[in-house]
Image: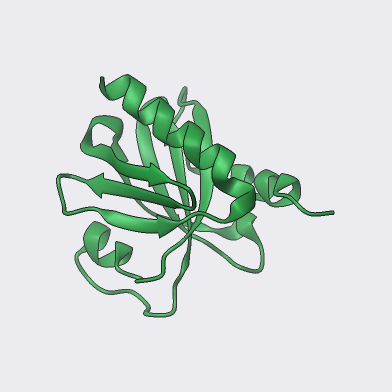
Length: 131
């Protein structure tokens, strides 16, 4: 009954629609942003102060960032991407993932309990490729 299996399928559907030819999804993560500052970091302009759900997907080439659709994750909208080497894991602990995009000061996400395994894998995979 509980878990992320159903939403994982919908999240994967959204991410796969944004992949470039030959690009492979490594792991998606469903996140919450208690500060709603990510649009400003990626786009340079504030989008909506009420946005709080995000999907961050690691592929073999890039990190994709989606504005999460709370009603249907498959309809989440790609708002930006960055090459893998332009994104760093600053911290990943119980319930949080801190990412730095293009050398910024870092952005702290809250990781829902059922997504912590994916978040840990995301951090591990991104760090392994960087090191």
